[in-house]
Image 1 (cartoon, rainbow, N blue to C red):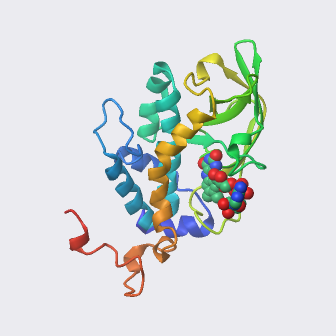
Image 2: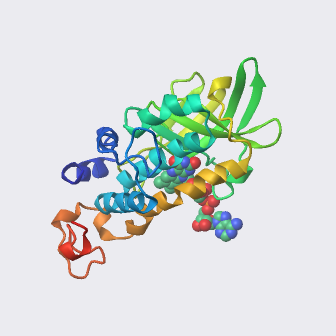
Length: 255
Ligand SMILES: Cc1cc2nc3c(=O)[nH]c(=O)nc-3n(C[C@H](O)[C@H](O)[C@H](O)COP(=O)(O)OP(=O)(O)OC[C@H]3O[C@@H](n4cnc5c(N)ncnc54)[C@H](O)[C@@H]3O)c2cc1C
């Protein structure tokens, strides 16, 4: 990451190949327990994200979005079949995962979201808009949160090549420049019944995912204010920097 990330940040480009590398190194899971994968404690997952984010906050955000929010939505709210289909591929970085909750007019108050899910033969139709969605435009699967006819918020798995799904990369960011967030428009997007998350039946379920992911998201947040996130830290030796030298002195490390 460190040798290449500067260029991606400067260009506002997204090093998608690093998602695959994170998956190969099994660093993409945000500590989520998954059959066939080594156990990882919450503490270890938080430290992984913190260390990655010391190199670049955008890359830590990838872990939080894909491993934390998208995978955890499926792990906590998905059917066994959905888990089998999506989780190993997302963990290995073979698929990209997004979590679409925020809307142009509902951020902090996301509980008031306006995207709708209307029943139709064999599934539902989604209509609405989502904004600031990490990984929302890279050709993966998006977990879309929408309000159904019962008035409650439900979760839907939407492949990004679905008809009616359009995503525009948000440009001109001053931070986290090496990951793309998308503005998504959903126009009569058909979601078959097998892509409805059976365990996502109210905003309380959305909140379960958000709460469980908070630890991962704190990785980038802990270190983002530090100057180290702008440039690879390998070149930094400033005694006054709160980020400290990179790599950290042996006394701060486990090895
Ligand atoms: C880089 C980036 C990545 C993101 N990735 C995702 C993603 O992958 N998926 C997703 O769904 N969303 C994502 N988001 C959206 C993010 O969750 C929202 O930005 C966040 O919820 C805040 O919403 P908002 O931007 O609309 O700000 P607002 O809700 O408009 O808040 C603006 C300011 O007002 C304050 N404020 C708001 N309400 C109150 C209140 N009642 N009382 C006092 N102060 C208040 C807030 O603290 C904030 O300082 C991302 C955002 C960014 C910037």
